[in-house]
Length: 320
Image 1 (tube, rainbow, N blue to C red):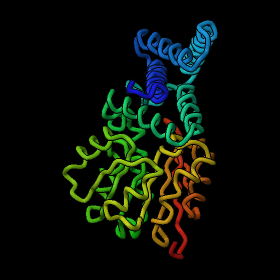
Image 2 (cartoon, rainbow, N blue to C red; image 1 turned 90 degrees about the vertical axis):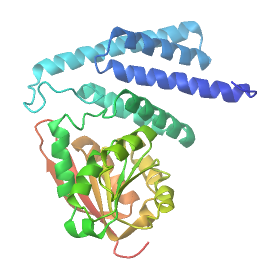
Image 3 (tube, helix red, strand yellow; image 1 turned 180 degrees about the horizontal axis):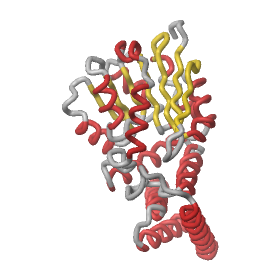
Image 4 (cartoon, one colour; image 1 turned 180 degrees about the vertical axis):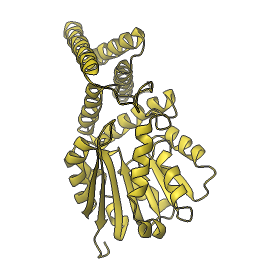
């Protein structure tokens, strides 16, 4: 723990709490019962460390356990009453596991974003570290036809003139599937991916190793501007943000998280946003405003697996 007891306790509680959050996420993907026990144990230890009595801590865990059981029941009943898309039969789902799990997933990150910025970034990075430790492709980008269709829509949404003007930057590139598709579509344009997780960065570099015009760097949203300038990117022609905004919090947080990127957008630079319909309705307007852009096109793709939105916006013609 070191010589500073307060500092040591804070770090250990963060790690225990993180283990609990991750273990709880795993229980939504039908992991063995040991995952549930680990989640409850970590949660109980976190509550004790936060100063709650053993009785209150135990009662809190019991309430969680009941809520989780109800959530699983709702997911099962909902799954039986919902026709499965032929494109998803026999394929594993993403880590959230069910519509309810997806809602809990986003809610957890929204709550996380309300923490002090330094703690929120550290916890967020820890969660992704665990996810990418479990799998190099935790969202099943390679296996789900839905993800492949979404990549095609994303690349098709980039205006050719803007893509050729380069550089193209993706915020939150994960293991590099979008980078790979963009690089195939724009073989002479510099493409830069950013991700908070060093494991994701390693995976993305491995995936795009044969594409010399792709570069991947580690950075979170707030540090994105500095990270880009450090590798010589002083202006962006196309900024891609796909399935990332809900990890940064709600509309209020987006103004802060994205502010370092706005000055780097070229005059008339293109912003491409891709998210599920509910996330798009809630978060796209805030992102467009935070990046000082104006929406020029918004296409709702009524995909059989899950509808999503591809929104295109442009930066002002006047230099920042």
